[in-house]
Length: 409
Image (cartoon, rainbow, N blue to C red):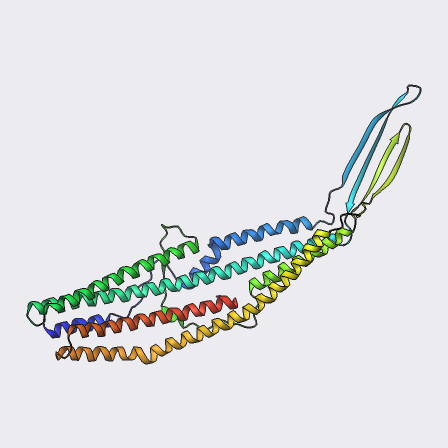
């Protein structure tokens, strides 16, 4: 093959180095569609939703005005008089325990705080799952574009290897050029296999997150550049992050439990009525039962409750401080990653085309050997790959910022 044909093959390979997204398939999902699926059927989200349903049980149990059911008591037995006369004595009574000291209110508030905590846990679980789905989706898009880039490089390496073989057969180049071209082709094929494996692995992770089976087809649709350049979510003025809301609800529940423990010093009285018949006489009596809280006065509940409240207050304060630090760190990382992308777009990518043209002219003039020719092509490929990596890191930084602020789409 003539040098001009080899140069044309190189130009075609270099033109194919930049990956282009293919047509969407029915099994492919956009990022928005993947997030919607995660909200609906992600196993972890469904489990958290079930815990919220379970937490409604204590609320239903604490809602009645009286905690305990009334007690019905009956007594009956024969009475024998001194003259041998017998009669039947019997009595029936009804008593109702009544809580004092605000126990019902404290118990109901504790149950409601527990339900609020589980609801916040569900939202926080959804926040973390959506963040993981976003990150895995972005990595899958990146792996797909790297695969397209690697396949284009393989095609270019194949054409170059054929050109070197033809030129060697024509006596234009030594055999070392053929060996160098074949080594480059082997490296390109290995890169294709590696990117295909990475893409398959990431799609498998996405299946697990979305609750898909191994047989369900799944693909990603979208361009990494557009995903990385989306505007930032609003970071101020929104509701508190769900994990902080869950800690606040847990603290409220601990305070309610502490009040319930303190109220155990109040006795639980039982009010009732009793009808009694003895011989030929009957009586209606009111009953009052008052246990004396002499030994058990809720000591354990008070001590444990006070320690729990103090612990949760410290945990909540630390979580609030950590949240501020995490948001600032995520914002700083996002800005630096955006700077890296802009730097490559401004100072590196425009030069690749010039490098290609200069290498082509040098190769045509015989001023550049095959090794130098392949070196330029490798530099073009690595720069394209580095740009894709920068886009991925910028998109992941944006995702981390959205997760830390709780402002997920």
